[in-house]
Image (cartoon, rainbow, N blue to C red; front, top):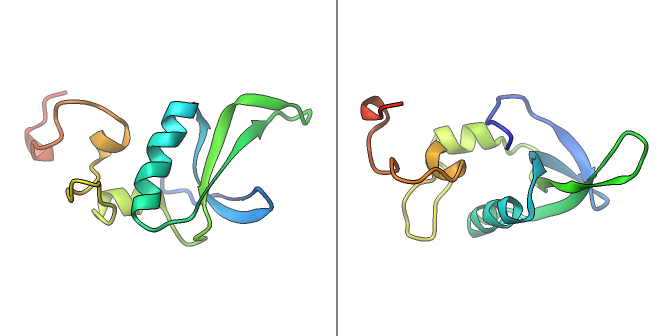
Amino acid sequence: MATLKGKHNIAEIGGVRCTVVETGATEARAEFLKEILSFNRYEVKVEKEKAKDGSLLDTLVIGVTDTIFNPMIAVYQKKLFRKDKKTVTPDYWYQKAGQDDIPYWQVQP
């Protein structure tokens, strides 16, 4: 699973220039992120990753067609929303259970 980094990557996914949201994702992870991003009105593109020799891998690349979108900024500035009208937190983004409603300064590692 990729981490939220400030680096802004752009790649061509499905013939369209996209901001890369995550690489190395599984099918379930791609569906989870696609649901969040589509709910927030981003056009999502998903494609199988390619190895250096051109062969297809089992992992996926997820991107959005908005080339100025940055997932780290969107999550930490609370610009993404879930279907239950709550904001997407870093724990929710990483699909961690339990500590979603606790303020970040009270979370125990």
